[in-house]
Length: 405
Image (cartoon, rainbow, N blue to C red; front, side, top):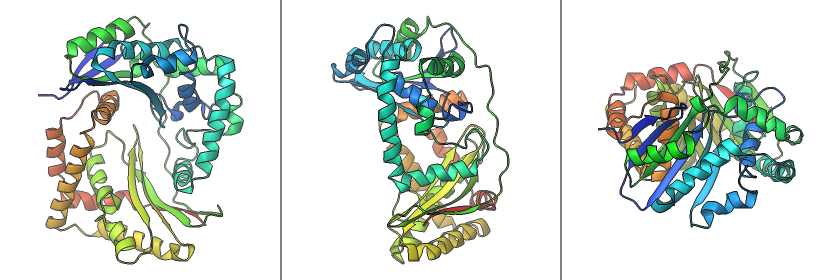
């Protein structure tokens, strides 16, 4: 039996719902539009638009948008990634209809008043300054910019102060009209009511929207040449990322790669790199590996920080560890432990109904289907040591480096 049930509204908006025993409801509209959908001259507009959606609609002033759910003890929030924008709400069960009505109003009826945009530019400029003050965050964006240079993915989400200064009401409307089409939306919900109820509420508040279809296709990034870049950031520590391109979210090798990355530098203290760099040698307080799959590509990165004098040795140890995984199969015992750990992390992450709902919405948007936990467990159990070695050899054959010195 599927944990989530699905439906489609007449205008093309797809819905997904899971019934759970809880007095709290989580719901979200996931829109397949992020910063990779920006045109040249629009860098930063996807994120700015997400902020501006809260600044007034045809029915509400900005303060009315912000107070609608908060006065009921609930909350409305949003975030933007490279490929999607999500508005999500958490309310008591009795307020579910109000949450859906507000999400629909904000997404489809925002007016983007210039007086509010002027104030929000200052807020985003402050966000950009804050991000520049955090080298452990900034380095990820700089690395992706280099990895996807020349493509739609080759610029960060926030944009620049110069770019956001140019965005006005009409620019916002053009971006929304082009990218926020009903065929690229999923409404996701989780709460103590049936899918029939979820659909009825969605139809009432979202079903009357005129159907629209996206008129463009994303362009897959071209092949890249490995790089070794050193940038002076005048930080107390050296920061680095070593990584490469990864597999797309639809690639069957995605799960073996995710397991490999977890073995290398997942959240557990017994990850390979944490043991090699921190526990054995005390070279780095923070080392982690990440894998971000996109719709047509992906990126793997190993981030670490250290004293400047220790940086060369950290790089050497990381590359030796990666090379060993690409050359030798992991032992049966080590693979079994890694699988148990990975499955447990998946299960624990899904204990959060909100996180589960958001993940399911994005998965349904891209896959048009959702794996149950049992199906996911079976896929992890089927991964072989040879697959781990092969994806390591393929992904890490063209390693790149970015170092903040």
